Amino acid sequence: MDEDILYHLDLGTKTHNLPAMFGDVKFVCVRGSSNRMKAFEDMQDICTGTDRYCMYKTGPVLSINHGMGIPSISIMLHELIKLLYYAKCYDVTIIRIGTSGGIGIEPGSIVITDTAVDSFFKPQFEQIILDTVVTQNTELDKELAEELLKCSKEVPDFPTLIGHTMCTYDFYEGQGRLDGALCSFSNEKKLDYLQRAYKTGIRNIEMESSVFAAMCGLCGLKAAVVCVTLLNRLECDQINLPREVLLEYQQHPQKLISIFIKKRLGRYNPK
Image 1: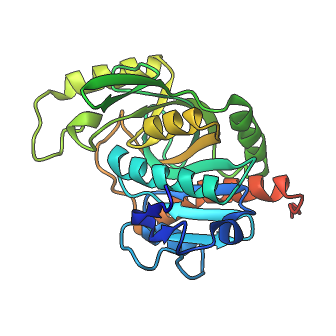
Image 2: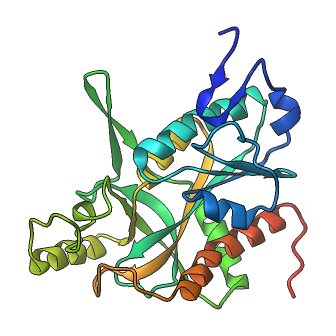
Image 3: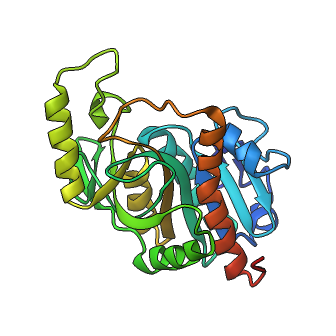
């Protein structure tokens, strides 16, 4: 194409000098909420012409939100990956930082995903392309996961572990919740399902990891998913922690990723 308009990012190959703006990017941090992004970066939003996503850049670190669920993060990833290509970036590490529901682990724990699985506990992402179901691999970079786990030793205040992450299309029935507007199963069936998930190695549930792992893998990007758990789904469905506790928990993965990036850049000074 003579011109590629990255519509949802309010950027384009003719309207912006993408190599000059983004050519030095080595780390990309993606997360769901734009408000969490603002808390992470006290800078001007690069995507000011759109209300879909917001983006901030500090040196070699690019941060962008992805909204909620597979469709929203998929749209963002298509345009982000094209952006990195047009900017001639290389050796880029991309990390999804988020919140999740834990299975059999304490709230406030961090789960580093080794493999994203679907609702049948299978390590795959199924996408309908035209009228064909295409199955894609959802394994994440094992060496990167181990490096992140090693960095977690610098922040012993909260437990960190590597495990499978189940990615669903829904927050309520799709994750076995009983408290939605609709519920078609019993508490006994819910607990049986979650306990079977735990036995397969699943330690948390969210709604973006499968397509994230699949797209990054197909495009040769080293990727990781690092999520804090806000509750133990074997004990409850609703997130009822005080706001200050939730805000503290959301800082856990950010602290870990900050240490990881600083170590990679040779700028980490433990106190």
